Length: 263
Image 1 (cartoon, rainbow, N blue to C red):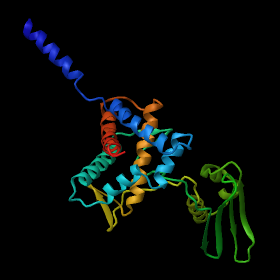
Image 2 (image 1 turned 60 degrees about the vertical axis):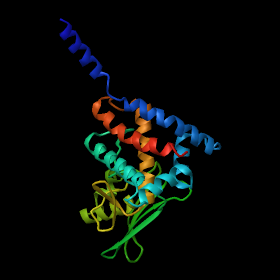
Image 3 (image 1 turned 90 degrees about the vertical axis):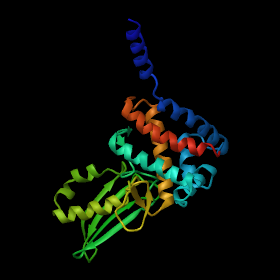
Image 4 (image 1 turned 30 degrees about the vertical axis):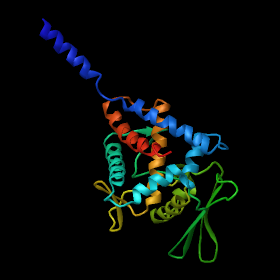
């Protein structure tokens, strides 16, 4: 009987012995939140603060940037690169969504796309897509020939929406290659154009076992973005709080905890 009791107690203790990385992540976010509220007192929302952290010099961003671009002989640098590598690995294994969109380094919106116009010349036809500078919701798409005669003109007033374009009768009347040309121009002015931080190119930044694009600033901004999106998913109750998700938050916690030490 005592042996059985000891066994039962042992199993109970094992069941609660794991570290709750959801709570640990929150505990690391709180001092980070306090820092940016104090550092940027004029900003009203968390998103404004995160966007400003990504786009300006400050202790948090500059520390992360130095660790991403630093020599791999340095223990701190190796540690951070390993944390980012692990975060990418776990995000690919265990999907986490924020507002219906998967959080991943391979398809991430880091900042607003400032490109307002794209054009393409193909077989004597000129394809154009233009966002209005004053009102990003107004978009004009057109095709003209070499004599500036219009073949197609579509005006959008409700913002970027590729599905709306694909339902348009003028678009549907085009040949397949013409549709592809319009889609290309349109995608180039997407205000929230996602990018892939992983690459198979020759010039890369190696983080752990993965090759990222050769742009330490973009990687830095992506990490900050992902930490913020994971914060939102957790705070807004979008995650499934199971073991697999906890593993992902463990990697995010490791990054955030290392960075707040120097604030």
